[in-house]
Image 1 (cartoon, rainbow, N blue to C red):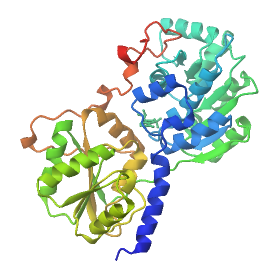
Image 2 (cartoon, rainbow, N blue to C red):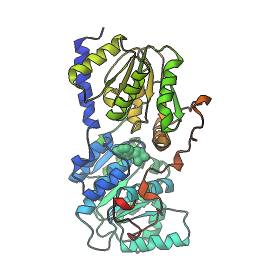
Image 3 (cartoon, helix red, strand yellow):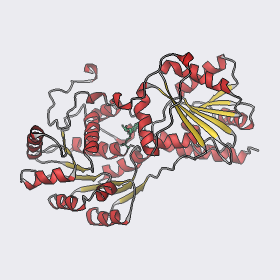
Image 4 (cartoon, helix red, strand yellow):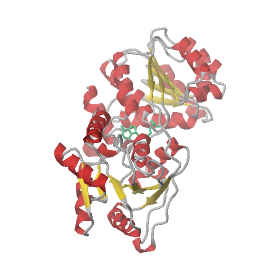
Length: 436
Ligand code: AMP
Protein backbone atom coordinates (compact mmCIF):
# COMPACT_ATOMS: atom_id res chain seq x y z
CA UNK A 1 0.00 0.00 0.00
CA UNK A 2 1.29 3.48 -0.86
CA UNK A 3 1.07 5.45 2.37
CA UNK A 4 1.38 9.10 3.27
CA UNK A 5 4.85 8.30 4.54
CA UNK A 6 5.84 7.13 1.07
CA UNK A 7 4.37 10.25 -0.43
CA UNK A 8 6.28 12.44 1.93
CA UNK A 9 9.47 10.58 1.12
CA UNK A 10 8.79 11.07 -2.57
CA UNK A 11 8.11 14.77 -2.22
CA UNK A 12 11.29 15.23 -0.20
CA UNK A 13 13.48 13.18 -2.47
CA UNK A 14 12.14 14.82 -5.60
CA UNK A 15 12.88 18.19 -4.03
CA UNK A 16 16.41 17.05 -3.27
CA UNK A 17 16.90 15.84 -6.78
CA UNK A 18 15.43 18.97 -8.22
CA UNK A 19 18.41 20.72 -6.68
CA UNK A 20 20.38 19.41 -9.65
CA UNK A 21 17.77 19.89 -12.28
CA UNK A 22 16.87 23.50 -11.68
CA UNK A 23 20.43 24.75 -11.63
CA UNK A 24 20.60 27.06 -14.56
CA UNK A 25 23.96 28.33 -15.80
CA UNK A 26 22.94 31.89 -14.92
CA UNK A 27 23.55 30.93 -11.26
CA UNK A 28 27.31 31.03 -11.84
CA UNK A 29 27.41 34.68 -12.89
CA UNK A 30 29.12 33.95 -16.21
CA UNK A 31 29.86 36.64 -18.77
CA UNK A 32 27.06 37.22 -21.29
CA UNK A 33 29.30 36.06 -24.19
CA UNK A 34 30.01 32.79 -22.43
CA UNK A 35 26.29 32.30 -21.72
CA UNK A 36 25.69 32.65 -25.46
CA UNK A 37 28.23 29.91 -26.15
CA UNK A 38 26.59 27.66 -23.54
CA UNK A 39 23.22 28.19 -25.11
CA UNK A 40 24.57 27.65 -28.66
CA UNK A 41 26.08 24.36 -27.42
CA UNK A 42 22.57 23.29 -26.41
CA UNK A 43 23.19 23.16 -22.64
CA UNK A 44 20.23 24.18 -20.49
CA UNK A 45 20.99 23.02 -16.98
CA UNK A 46 24.24 22.10 -15.28
CA UNK A 47 25.02 18.40 -14.82
CA UNK A 48 25.87 17.22 -11.27
CA UNK A 49 29.62 17.35 -11.89
CA UNK A 50 29.28 20.87 -13.28
CA UNK A 51 27.15 21.93 -10.37
CA UNK A 52 29.83 20.79 -7.95
CA UNK A 53 33.03 21.67 -9.80
CA UNK A 54 32.22 25.09 -11.28
CA UNK A 55 31.75 27.07 -8.02
CA UNK A 56 34.92 25.57 -6.53
CA UNK A 57 37.01 26.44 -9.58
CA UNK A 58 35.57 29.95 -9.60
CA UNK A 59 36.64 30.21 -5.92
CA UNK A 60 40.19 29.28 -6.89
CA UNK A 61 40.30 25.83 -5.26
CA UNK A 62 42.39 22.90 -6.51
CA UNK A 63 40.22 19.90 -7.33
CA UNK A 64 40.48 16.14 -7.54
CA UNK A 65 37.36 14.72 -9.15
CA UNK A 66 36.40 11.19 -10.03
CA UNK A 67 34.09 11.59 -12.99
CA UNK A 68 33.70 9.55 -16.11
CA UNK A 69 33.26 10.65 -19.69
CA UNK A 70 29.59 11.38 -20.31
CA UNK A 71 29.04 13.30 -17.07
CA UNK A 72 29.78 16.71 -18.63
CA UNK A 73 33.19 16.94 -16.95
CA UNK A 74 34.84 18.78 -19.86
CA UNK A 75 32.52 21.77 -19.56
CA UNK A 76 32.86 21.52 -15.77
CA UNK A 77 36.48 22.62 -16.03
CA UNK A 78 36.34 24.66 -19.23
CA UNK A 79 33.48 26.97 -18.27
CA UNK A 80 34.99 28.39 -15.06
CA UNK A 81 38.43 28.66 -16.66
CA UNK A 82 37.01 30.56 -19.65
CA UNK A 83 34.99 32.72 -17.26
CA UNK A 84 38.09 33.61 -15.24
CA UNK A 85 40.13 34.27 -18.38
CA UNK A 86 37.44 36.64 -19.60
CA UNK A 87 37.43 38.48 -16.27
CA UNK A 88 41.25 38.72 -16.17
CA UNK A 89 42.59 38.58 -19.71
CA UNK A 90 46.25 37.92 -20.31
CA UNK A 91 48.32 41.09 -20.57
CA UNK A 92 51.55 39.50 -21.75
CA UNK A 93 52.58 36.83 -24.22
CA UNK A 94 52.03 33.69 -22.20
CA UNK A 95 49.99 30.52 -22.33
CA UNK A 96 47.34 30.84 -19.63
CA UNK A 97 45.77 27.39 -19.19
CA UNK A 98 47.22 23.96 -19.94
CA UNK A 99 44.97 20.92 -20.32
CA UNK A 100 46.92 17.65 -20.53
CA UNK A 101 45.07 14.63 -21.95
CA UNK A 102 46.04 11.06 -22.93
CA UNK A 103 45.05 10.94 -26.60
CA UNK A 104 44.89 13.13 -29.67
CA UNK A 105 41.18 12.27 -30.06
CA UNK A 106 40.44 13.67 -26.64
CA UNK A 107 42.61 16.73 -27.36
CA UNK A 108 40.62 17.44 -30.53
CA UNK A 109 37.32 16.85 -28.76
CA UNK A 110 38.18 19.23 -25.92
CA UNK A 111 39.47 21.83 -28.39
CA UNK A 112 36.08 21.62 -30.11
CA UNK A 113 34.33 22.15 -26.78
CA UNK A 114 36.50 25.24 -26.19
CA UNK A 115 35.70 26.53 -29.64
CA UNK A 116 31.96 25.99 -29.15
CA UNK A 117 31.71 27.42 -25.64
CA UNK A 118 33.95 30.42 -26.31
CA UNK A 119 32.55 31.09 -29.77
CA UNK A 120 31.33 34.59 -28.90
CA UNK A 121 34.46 35.58 -26.99
CA UNK A 122 38.03 36.36 -27.99
CA UNK A 123 39.47 33.36 -26.13
CA UNK A 124 42.19 31.66 -28.17
CA UNK A 125 43.08 28.01 -28.06
CA UNK A 126 45.38 25.46 -29.64
CA UNK A 127 45.41 21.67 -29.65
CA UNK A 128 48.90 20.17 -29.60
CA UNK A 129 49.19 16.47 -30.31
CA UNK A 130 51.39 13.99 -32.08
CA UNK A 131 51.04 12.77 -35.63
CA UNK A 132 50.55 16.16 -37.28
CA UNK A 133 52.43 17.38 -40.38
CA UNK A 134 55.11 20.08 -40.66
CA UNK A 135 52.54 22.81 -41.14
CA UNK A 136 50.75 21.82 -37.92
CA UNK A 137 54.08 21.95 -36.11
CA UNK A 138 54.80 25.47 -37.35
CA UNK A 139 51.34 26.60 -36.28
CA UNK A 140 51.77 25.02 -32.86
CA UNK A 141 55.20 26.64 -32.41
CA UNK A 142 53.78 30.05 -33.34
CA UNK A 143 50.85 29.64 -30.95
CA UNK A 144 52.92 28.39 -28.04
CA UNK A 145 55.55 31.12 -28.41
CA UNK A 146 52.99 33.93 -28.74
CA UNK A 147 50.86 32.50 -25.94
CA UNK A 148 47.35 31.03 -26.27
CA UNK A 149 44.64 31.31 -23.64
CA UNK A 150 43.99 27.56 -23.54
CA UNK A 151 46.43 24.88 -24.69
CA UNK A 152 45.14 21.31 -24.93
CA UNK A 153 47.93 18.79 -25.38
CA UNK A 154 49.11 15.22 -25.22
CA UNK A 155 52.20 14.91 -22.98
CA UNK A 156 54.83 13.71 -25.48
CA UNK A 157 54.20 16.36 -28.12
CA UNK A 158 54.03 19.13 -25.53
CA UNK A 159 57.35 18.08 -24.08
CA UNK A 160 58.90 18.11 -27.56
CA UNK A 161 57.86 21.76 -27.94
CA UNK A 162 58.97 22.68 -24.42
CA UNK A 163 62.40 21.18 -25.06
CA UNK A 164 62.86 23.53 -28.01
CA UNK A 165 62.71 26.47 -25.64
CA UNK A 166 60.05 28.79 -27.06
CA UNK A 167 56.98 27.79 -25.03
CA UNK A 168 55.88 30.68 -22.78
CA UNK A 169 54.52 29.65 -19.38
CA UNK A 170 55.47 32.72 -17.33
CA UNK A 171 51.85 33.72 -16.63
CA UNK A 172 50.24 30.26 -16.67
CA UNK A 173 47.42 30.07 -14.14
CA UNK A 174 45.54 26.82 -14.70
CA UNK A 175 46.61 23.21 -15.10
CA UNK A 176 44.09 20.48 -15.89
CA UNK A 177 44.97 16.79 -15.96
CA UNK A 178 42.10 14.99 -17.68
CA UNK A 179 41.65 11.20 -17.62
CA UNK A 180 44.64 11.04 -15.31
CA UNK A 181 44.27 7.28 -14.70
CA UNK A 182 44.49 6.62 -18.42
CA UNK A 183 47.56 8.82 -18.74
CA UNK A 184 49.32 6.83 -16.05
CA UNK A 185 48.25 3.54 -17.64
CA UNK A 186 49.77 4.77 -20.89
CA UNK A 187 53.09 5.49 -19.14
CA UNK A 188 52.93 9.30 -19.24
CA UNK A 189 53.82 9.89 -15.58
CA UNK A 190 57.41 11.07 -16.20
CA UNK A 191 56.44 13.28 -19.15
CA UNK A 192 53.69 14.92 -17.09
CA UNK A 193 56.01 15.62 -14.18
CA UNK A 194 58.62 17.08 -16.57
CA UNK A 195 56.02 19.43 -18.03
CA UNK A 196 54.86 20.47 -14.57
CA UNK A 197 58.45 21.37 -13.58
CA UNK A 198 58.35 24.10 -16.23
CA UNK A 199 55.15 25.70 -14.90
CA UNK A 200 54.97 28.53 -12.37
CA UNK A 201 54.55 27.25 -8.80
CA UNK A 202 51.52 29.41 -8.16
CA UNK A 203 48.67 28.04 -10.26
CA UNK A 204 45.30 26.35 -9.89
CA UNK A 205 45.29 22.59 -10.47
CA UNK A 206 42.36 20.40 -11.49
CA UNK A 207 42.67 16.62 -11.77
CA UNK A 208 39.97 14.42 -13.31
CA UNK A 209 40.08 10.65 -13.31
CA UNK A 210 37.48 7.94 -13.91
CA UNK A 211 39.06 5.80 -11.20
CA UNK A 212 41.13 6.69 -8.14
CA UNK A 213 43.82 4.04 -7.71
CA UNK A 214 46.64 4.60 -5.22
CA UNK A 215 49.07 5.91 -7.85
CA UNK A 216 46.63 8.71 -8.79
CA UNK A 217 46.35 9.77 -5.17
CA UNK A 218 50.16 9.77 -4.95
CA UNK A 219 50.42 11.99 -8.01
CA UNK A 220 47.67 14.24 -6.66
CA UNK A 221 49.62 14.70 -3.42
CA UNK A 222 52.60 15.96 -5.42
CA UNK A 223 50.69 18.29 -7.72
CA UNK A 224 47.57 19.58 -5.95
CA UNK A 225 47.32 22.03 -3.10
CA UNK A 226 44.65 21.22 -0.48
CA UNK A 227 42.26 19.96 -3.14
CA UNK A 228 38.49 19.74 -2.80
CA UNK A 229 37.45 16.17 -3.54
CA UNK A 230 34.47 15.44 -5.76
CA UNK A 231 33.05 12.04 -6.48
CA UNK A 232 30.48 11.60 -9.21
CA UNK A 233 29.98 7.89 -9.37
CA UNK A 234 27.45 6.54 -11.76
CA UNK A 235 25.77 3.28 -11.05
CA UNK A 236 25.20 0.89 -13.91
CA UNK A 237 21.63 -0.07 -14.88
CA UNK A 238 20.11 -3.27 -13.53
CA UNK A 239 20.91 -6.22 -15.85
CA UNK A 240 17.25 -7.30 -15.78
CA UNK A 241 16.18 -4.23 -17.75
CA UNK A 242 15.79 -4.96 -21.44
CA UNK A 243 16.99 -1.81 -23.16
CA UNK A 244 16.19 -0.80 -26.72
CA UNK A 245 16.48 2.34 -28.82
CA UNK A 246 14.38 3.29 -31.84
CA UNK A 247 16.18 5.59 -34.26
CA UNK A 248 13.43 7.73 -35.79
CA UNK A 249 12.51 11.17 -37.09
CA UNK A 250 10.88 13.48 -34.57
CA UNK A 251 7.54 13.30 -36.39
CA UNK A 252 7.50 9.51 -35.95
CA UNK A 253 7.79 9.61 -32.15
CA UNK A 254 4.14 10.11 -31.15
CA UNK A 255 2.79 7.48 -33.59
CA UNK A 256 5.49 5.09 -32.35
CA UNK A 257 4.54 5.62 -28.69
CA UNK A 258 0.90 4.88 -29.57
CA UNK A 259 2.00 1.76 -31.45
CA UNK A 260 4.18 0.52 -28.59
CA UNK A 261 1.40 0.99 -26.04
CA UNK A 262 -0.88 -1.21 -28.14
CA UNK A 263 1.61 -4.07 -28.45
CA UNK A 264 0.72 -5.76 -25.21
CA UNK A 265 -1.07 -5.25 -21.94
CA UNK A 266 1.39 -3.50 -19.65
CA UNK A 267 0.71 -3.06 -15.93
CA UNK A 268 2.23 0.38 -15.58
CA UNK A 269 3.97 2.49 -18.19
CA UNK A 270 6.06 5.53 -17.30
CA UNK A 271 6.96 7.88 -20.16
CA UNK A 272 9.68 10.49 -19.61
CA UNK A 273 10.03 13.76 -21.49
CA UNK A 274 12.79 16.31 -20.86
CA UNK A 275 10.50 19.36 -20.85
CA UNK A 276 7.16 20.21 -19.30
CA UNK A 277 5.82 21.34 -22.66
CA UNK A 278 6.50 17.99 -24.30
CA UNK A 279 4.93 16.18 -21.31
CA UNK A 280 1.76 18.24 -21.79
CA UNK A 281 1.72 17.78 -25.57
CA UNK A 282 2.26 14.02 -25.43
CA UNK A 283 -0.33 13.58 -22.68
CA UNK A 284 -2.90 15.52 -24.75
CA UNK A 285 -2.15 13.43 -27.84
CA UNK A 286 -2.42 10.13 -25.99
CA UNK A 287 -5.63 11.15 -24.21
CA UNK A 288 -7.18 11.97 -27.58
CA UNK A 289 -6.71 8.35 -28.64
CA UNK A 290 -8.74 7.21 -25.61
CA UNK A 291 -5.83 5.91 -23.53
CA UNK A 292 -6.03 6.21 -19.76
CA UNK A 293 -3.10 8.54 -19.21
CA UNK A 294 -2.15 11.61 -17.15
CA UNK A 295 0.83 13.89 -16.59
CA UNK A 296 3.10 14.92 -13.73
CA UNK A 297 5.54 17.86 -13.63
CA UNK A 298 6.42 20.83 -11.47
CA UNK A 299 3.71 23.14 -12.90
CA UNK A 300 1.10 21.11 -11.03
CA UNK A 301 0.01 21.90 -7.48
CA UNK A 302 1.40 19.52 -4.89
CA UNK A 303 -2.08 18.05 -4.21
CA UNK A 304 -2.59 17.26 -7.86
CA UNK A 305 0.86 15.67 -8.11
CA UNK A 306 0.16 13.47 -5.13
CA UNK A 307 -3.23 12.49 -6.50
CA UNK A 308 -1.84 11.51 -9.91
CA UNK A 309 0.98 9.56 -8.34
CA UNK A 310 -1.38 7.73 -6.02
CA UNK A 311 -3.61 6.69 -8.97
CA UNK A 312 -0.58 5.50 -10.92
CA UNK A 313 0.81 3.55 -8.00
CA UNK A 314 -2.52 1.84 -7.36
CA UNK A 315 -2.92 0.85 -11.02
CA UNK A 316 -6.04 2.96 -11.61
CA UNK A 317 -3.93 5.08 -13.96
CA UNK A 318 -1.88 2.72 -16.17
CA UNK A 319 0.13 5.32 -18.13
CA UNK A 320 1.92 8.36 -16.74
CA UNK A 321 3.86 11.00 -18.69
CA UNK A 322 6.47 12.71 -16.51
CA UNK A 323 9.42 15.05 -16.43
CA UNK A 324 12.60 14.01 -14.64
CA UNK A 325 10.84 14.89 -11.42
CA UNK A 326 9.98 11.17 -11.37
CA UNK A 327 13.34 9.85 -12.52
CA UNK A 328 14.74 9.46 -9.01
CA UNK A 329 13.61 8.62 -5.57
CA UNK A 330 10.29 6.89 -6.26
CA UNK A 331 9.92 3.23 -5.82
CA UNK A 332 6.96 1.67 -7.59
CA UNK A 333 7.31 -2.07 -8.02
CA UNK A 334 5.29 -2.95 -11.07
CA UNK A 335 6.30 -0.49 -13.77
CA UNK A 336 7.01 -2.87 -16.64
CA UNK A 337 7.79 -0.33 -19.35
CA UNK A 338 9.71 2.95 -19.28
CA UNK A 339 9.70 4.99 -22.47
CA UNK A 340 12.20 7.80 -22.94
CA UNK A 341 10.25 9.97 -25.33
CA UNK A 342 13.48 11.92 -25.74
CA UNK A 343 17.08 11.14 -24.88
CA UNK A 344 17.97 12.38 -21.39
CA UNK A 345 20.67 15.04 -21.04
CA UNK A 346 23.23 12.79 -19.46
CA UNK A 347 24.01 9.20 -18.66
CA UNK A 348 23.11 9.57 -15.04
CA UNK A 349 19.58 10.70 -15.88
CA UNK A 350 19.29 7.75 -18.27
CA UNK A 351 20.31 5.26 -15.59
CA UNK A 352 17.89 6.80 -13.11
CA UNK A 353 14.99 6.94 -15.57
CA UNK A 354 15.25 3.34 -16.74
CA UNK A 355 15.86 2.23 -13.14
CA UNK A 356 12.15 2.92 -12.48
CA UNK A 357 11.41 -0.45 -14.12
CA UNK A 358 12.54 -3.98 -13.16
CA UNK A 359 12.45 -3.08 -9.50
CA UNK A 360 12.16 -5.84 -6.89
CA UNK A 361 12.21 -9.16 -8.77
CA UNK A 362 10.26 -8.02 -11.82
CA UNK A 363 11.68 -7.73 -15.31
CA UNK A 364 11.16 -4.55 -17.25
CA UNK A 365 11.76 -2.91 -20.61
CA UNK A 366 13.21 0.52 -21.31
CA UNK A 367 12.69 2.01 -24.74
CA UNK A 368 14.37 5.21 -25.90
CA UNK A 369 13.20 7.18 -28.92
CA UNK A 370 16.08 8.95 -30.62
CA UNK A 371 15.76 11.61 -33.30
CA UNK A 372 18.66 12.76 -35.48
CA UNK A 373 19.77 15.56 -33.18
CA UNK A 374 19.72 13.25 -30.15
CA UNK A 375 22.01 10.63 -31.64
CA UNK A 376 25.13 12.21 -30.10
CA UNK A 377 23.50 12.26 -26.69
CA UNK A 378 22.74 8.55 -27.01
CA UNK A 379 26.34 7.93 -28.04
CA UNK A 380 27.56 9.73 -24.88
CA UNK A 381 25.21 7.58 -22.79
CA UNK A 382 26.46 4.42 -24.48
CA UNK A 383 30.03 5.48 -23.69
CA UNK A 384 29.10 5.84 -20.07
CA UNK A 385 27.31 2.48 -19.96
CA UNK A 386 30.32 0.89 -21.63
CA UNK A 387 28.12 -0.82 -24.21
CA UNK A 388 25.67 0.08 -26.96
CA UNK A 389 21.94 0.24 -26.35
CA UNK A 390 20.52 -2.35 -28.84
CA UNK A 391 18.73 -0.69 -31.76
CA UNK A 392 15.25 -2.00 -32.47
CA UNK A 393 13.85 -2.36 -35.97
CA UNK A 394 11.18 0.26 -36.59
CA UNK A 395 8.05 -1.47 -38.03
CA UNK A 396 7.72 -1.03 -41.79
CA UNK A 397 4.45 0.87 -41.53
CA UNK A 398 6.39 3.90 -40.20
CA UNK A 399 8.23 4.27 -43.51
CA UNK A 400 11.77 5.50 -43.89
CA UNK A 401 13.86 6.16 -40.77
CA UNK A 402 17.24 7.86 -40.24
CA UNK A 403 20.48 5.90 -39.96
CA UNK A 404 22.26 5.68 -36.62
CA UNK A 405 25.33 7.76 -37.38
CA UNK A 406 25.97 10.01 -34.36
CA UNK A 407 29.24 11.49 -35.59
CA UNK A 408 27.36 13.04 -38.54
CA UNK A 409 25.43 15.34 -36.19
CA UNK A 410 27.76 17.85 -34.59
CA UNK A 411 25.96 19.59 -31.78
CA UNK A 412 28.42 22.51 -31.46
CA UNK A 413 27.10 24.70 -34.21
CA UNK A 414 30.10 26.98 -33.93
CA UNK A 415 32.54 24.26 -34.83
CA UNK A 416 31.73 23.64 -38.42
CA UNK A 417 34.95 25.16 -39.81
CA UNK A 418 37.04 24.48 -36.77
CA UNK A 419 40.62 23.46 -37.25
CA UNK A 420 42.11 22.03 -34.12
CA UNK A 421 45.15 24.21 -34.43
CA UNK A 422 43.34 27.52 -35.00
CA UNK A 423 44.90 30.31 -33.01
CA UNK A 424 43.85 33.84 -32.19
CA UNK A 425 42.02 33.82 -35.48
CA UNK A 426 38.99 35.87 -34.73
CA UNK A 427 38.45 36.96 -38.34
CA UNK A 428 36.19 33.99 -39.04
CA UNK A 429 33.97 34.55 -36.05
CA UNK A 430 30.54 36.01 -36.66
CA UNK A 431 29.62 39.33 -35.09
CA UNK A 432 26.64 37.84 -33.28
CA UNK A 433 23.81 35.38 -33.17
CA UNK A 434 22.14 36.69 -36.33
CA UNK A 435 25.05 35.69 -38.46
CA UNK A 436 24.85 32.04 -37.62
P1 AMP B 1 31.84 14.91 -21.29
O1 AMP B 1 31.55 14.11 -20.05
O2 AMP B 1 32.51 16.20 -20.98
O3 AMP B 1 32.55 14.09 -22.33
O4 AMP B 1 30.43 15.34 -21.91
C1 AMP B 1 29.51 14.40 -22.44
C2 AMP B 1 28.50 15.05 -23.37
O5 AMP B 1 27.59 15.85 -22.62
C3 AMP B 1 29.12 15.98 -24.42
O6 AMP B 1 28.50 15.71 -25.66
C4 AMP B 1 28.76 17.36 -23.95
O7 AMP B 1 28.65 18.28 -25.01
C5 AMP B 1 27.44 17.14 -23.25
N1 AMP B 1 27.16 18.09 -22.16
C6 AMP B 1 28.03 18.60 -21.27
N2 AMP B 1 27.40 19.42 -20.40
C7 AMP B 1 26.09 19.43 -20.74
C8 AMP B 1 24.93 20.08 -20.20
N3 AMP B 1 24.99 20.87 -19.13
N4 AMP B 1 23.75 19.85 -20.81
C9 AMP B 1 23.68 19.03 -21.89
N5 AMP B 1 24.72 18.39 -22.43
C10 AMP B 1 25.93 18.58 -21.87
